[in-house]
Image 1 (cartoon, rainbow, N blue to C red):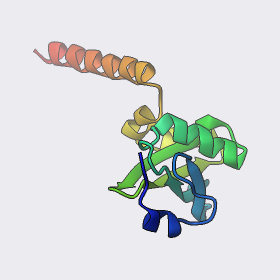
Image 2: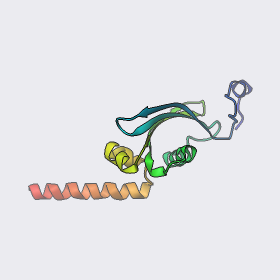
Image 3: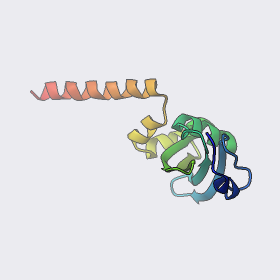
Image 4: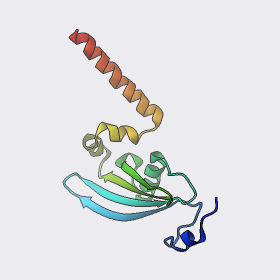
Length: 134
């Protein structure tokens, strides 16, 4: 894929077509919830948006923390730019993160097979409760 010359001229330093670059744009500490709230820019010109698991792994690696403490809240991709902004919560402790983050966010941050297994367990429990009511 060829990148227009005028686009290449306005790219930030270190960003190249065909290469994924992560930059922390904003880093806030939330002591009440025992977490850091990050906004990360991902430049992926000429490449698809990286998936959540890849982003989660890379951010944990960048910050030097365990992967289970990192939760990707949202990935906003700007059409045509090859740039995404990612909302990330990094907890002091993985157990605190599991208590605070909603289940749907936890499921999005798991491998697909593991998340599907938990979703199926939830469906079965709901079906059992419905049967008991009748």
